[in-house]
Image 1 (cartoon, helix red, strand yellow):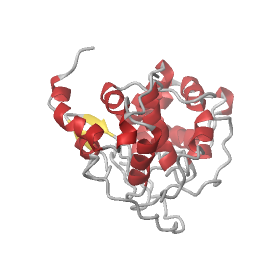
Image 2 (tube, rainbow, N blue to C red):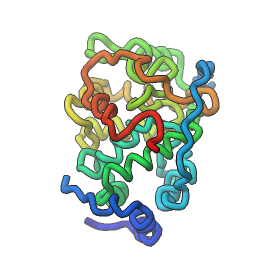
Image 3 (cartoon, rainbow, N blue to C red):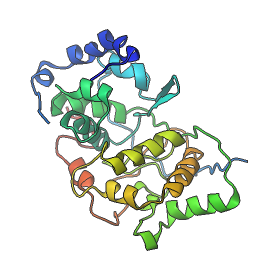
Image 4 (spheres, helix red, strand yellow):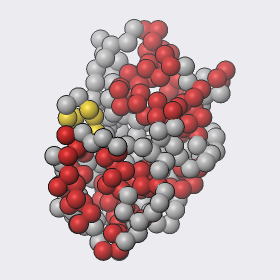
Length: 270
C-alpha cells in the first residue's frame, strides 16, 4: 500500500506510542446568517475520577488529535476531538481500527498491536479530558433547509424508517455514556465522511450495525443538510455526555452492547 510523505515524516513519532505502551499491550496482537443554536447547559455531572497523565505516552496521538484530544486541522484534513467522549465509545473505535471494522491507514497502523487493556487506559484518559463540543463552523442554511435538518435531528423521517438523531445521541446531541458520541463540535465534511464510511463499508460496528442501516436510508441531500446544521451547533463549554440510561435507543445496536464490556467502565480502574 503506498505511503504518503506526510505519514512518513510522522513515523518516528508514531513508534513512540507502541514503545510507551505497557509490555502487556505490545504482545496482544490480533489478526483481525448562521444556524447556530446554543444548547443550554445540563445539570452538572459528577467530577471525573482522576486518571494517570498519559500525555507523554500518547505523544503520537497528539500529533493529529491535540495534546488533550481537542481535535486539530492539518492541511485541510480534520482530526476529530477525542476529549470528553465516552470511554466505551473510544475503546470500541480503537478496537475497530485494530480488528478491521474501521479503515483508516494511520489508525490501523497504530492500533494493530495494542491489547484491550492498554486501549482501555487510553480511552479512560481521553474520556476524562474536558469535552470539546463547541461550534466549529457557521454555514448559513435557508429556512427550508434548516427546518428539514431540524426535523431529521429531532423527529427523524418515519417514511424512510429513520429515527431521530437525538433519539440515540440525546436531545443535547452531546452523546450518552457509555458508548454514544457527541454530534456537536465536528465539521460538516467530517460528519459527511463518517456517514459515507458506513454506506460504503469503510466503517462498521458490531452487528446489528444500526448506524450503517441508518446511513443507507438517508437521502444524500439530507446527509449534507444534517451535517451542515450539526456543525453549526454548540453545547455548553466542557459539557459532558448524558449519563447512561438517559435514552432508550429506538433500534438494536451491537455497538451499544459492546460499550458495556467490563473492560471499560465509566470510572477509571485502580
